Amino acid sequence: MTPRHLTPENAHDSIGETFVSDWIVVDQDRISAFGRITEDPDPHHMDPVYAAEHSPWGGTISYGFLTMSLMTPMMYQIYRYRMDGGREDGYPASYGFEGVRFVAPVPSGSRIRGHFTVKDVTWRKPGQLLITFACRVEIEGGDRPALVGEWLSLWLTPGEGA
Image 1 (tube, rainbow, N blue to C red):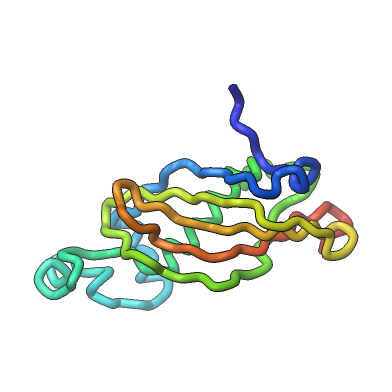
Image 2: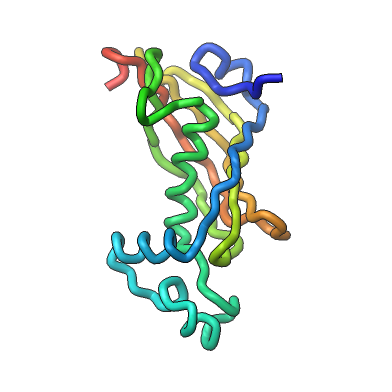
């Protein structure tokens, strides 16, 4: 059976449905690259030796905003949107977040995946379908999610949605 993906055509019928992404590895190379790019040298994220000795987590952890940013490739899976080819019927754009909470730390080397439940679907204006998702980022083997919140996504129709 082919997994179901979210489309503008099935979005209204998907209210209440949860879509789950594939796993993404959050390793030290990814964490350190994020720290360099964002100019945040916090040793709880960047320095495994320091973190092993001084952090309450016994090692380095992902930046909360790294975890949050990885929701983008997760969402592309839900929409079956490819950056190398896109889709002819439009593309997703982030419209914002509501009530985001970083619930549990993501230890370096963990795998995470997103659970996106469609809460609401409305036409914001012609060419802009606003989809509200309840989001939860799961840590493999974890008791609590890494992140919870609501994500507002716009599906933009070419030539109409900008």
